[in-house]
Amino acid sequence: MLRGGKIDPALDGAPRDSILIEGDRIAWIGEARDAPRAGKAIDLHGSRTVAGLTDAHLHLFMRAQELLNLGLGPATASIPALLECVRSACAATAPGQWVMSADYSEQFLAERRHPTRTELDAVSQGNPVLLRRTGGHLSVANSAALALAGFDINTPDPPGGTIERAHGELTGVLTENAADIVAALIPPPSPAQTIEAIRKVAAECLSLGIVAAVEAAVGFNNGFGVEWNIWQALKDAGGLPLRMGFMLRIDPAEARRLNLRPTGHDDHWQVRTLKFFVDGIIGARTAAFSEPYADRDTKGFLMEEAADLRAKAVEAHVLGWQLAAHVIGDRAIAHWLDCLEAAAEAAPSPERHRLEHFAVPGRDALARVHRLGAIVVPQYGFLHRLGNSFASAIGPDRAQRLYPGRSVKRAGVTIAGSSDHPIGPLSPYPAIAAAINRTTSAGLVLNPEEGLPVREALAAYTQGGAFAMGHELRRGQLQAGMLADIAVLDRDILMVDPAELAETRSRLTVVGGKIAYSDGTLAA
Image 1: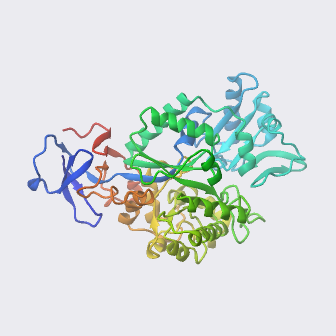
Image 2: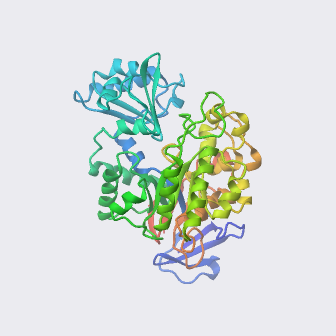
Image 3: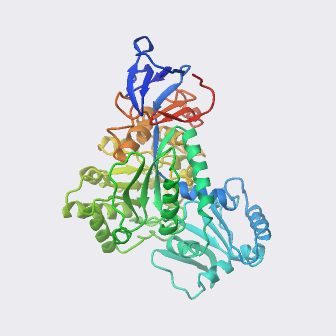
């Protein structure tokens, strides 16, 4: 039994103080004075206790590889500092071996620009170097890496990607599919190394009260076969304490070839979703908008021909897959809704399809999402971390439409909270805070009318995340008969200031009735 806490079963302001767990379920919830007998009790000392959280879209595999590669995250503050890190890594690497970073971002650098190919050449000692921008949609390569990919000044841009040029030379900057071509040349870490790193990221999730996570694009980093084999090896080795869901970055024809079928609403290891990339990202100016960017004469682009994507979506829908798509710009969102409407016309399906990011929807998008019964999966943490750079890229008017909240709820559409980690912070609490106050790190407030009440912002991670995985009848709320997925938090997030809320951690995390994480402060 967990007793002596602040337990709000339905996030409706009617708290209880005790929960009885039997097996993997909540057997009873109420006041301690009325509690049934229990063999073991843990005193919660007044801690706010909520349903375990779900991160509906993150990249555990990518974060695990960051742990195994050269780190160029926020601590690397300038181009000279970055180049010195690359110089040291190349000096410590055997000649001809790759040096790679997976967490590089120009947003962390004082110069707010990418290093150039020639700058990397000067420090790489002939080793191929690829710096993948956080998220994987843009990379910077040196000459050795470009040569291995067969890229030179005469190489045409591949479909769905660009090879940047300036003054008749390659700059080293690659976007989308062009970046993927180079990344595919890099030998991945061993499966054992990757599995160990994934376990570390899963443990960090549990320390934040996250009990379930959806891997957002199996195949995005090293190709589907390599990554899926590692995930299968991890499953065979006992899996993770986290409940896992997987979006597979393959088309339905490849899924058939591999004999992969959706597994329904499995509680622990769910394979039911195919993931498509419709456009790119704002940072690389590859997200697809109907109007040009504010600072560049481009509207971004769609990753593949419209008819091809529509055909894949219809086929996958008919085969019973849940469909998810990366959609940032209003043009990409509208195109994906066209695809979902075509799928709905082709055949009925019980699946609720997904729109990942849903960053800048058009005026009629929410009504269309509601008619389709689809789910939006935003990252409100981006408002805080990247809001100012987004506003500069798309202009102040469109910036006020970024990551809507209240209007989504008014439209009757489910929000499933997510981090897109490692692009956003793994902790859900900065995102919950940003969903409430919609304030960037520089103090810019982006459409406060879209702010969510704290209980609705939290519910996006408890009820919304469970709903996205088809688990809403089994978890996501603290009710008798539901799975005992519980997070005991170190502060009362329903009452504290959003600035303090962002630092929240879990004191005790329970998954299926078993303690999966404890910080040691609560004892039986």
